[in-house]
Image (cartoon, rainbow, N blue to C red; front, side, top):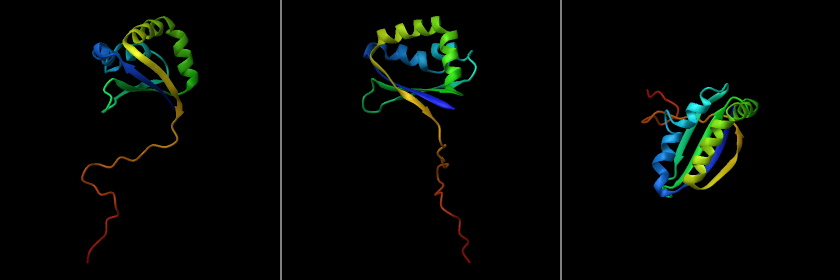
Length: 118
């Protein structure tokens, strides 16, 4: 599995549109939901610079991603043009392969070993 990481700096007046595109049921997901190997998109918003977003696209493989980009080239070009109008910068940070998943512990659990007290 791979993740493509993008960084966007979004114009203030376009933040709502931008979030709709990458949010649940948005245009980005609608284009690639049809593609084999597409697992979804995660959108993060910087807590200090509210105009800065990280987008993570999750794919089974880069080969399937490349096939989808070709198959949906027209829709992708339209979305890219919209994004260019709404953003000050767009940088593909890179393509990353997952090596291990972090363990997230439920709240209230110390995560330490249980000991029996006698």
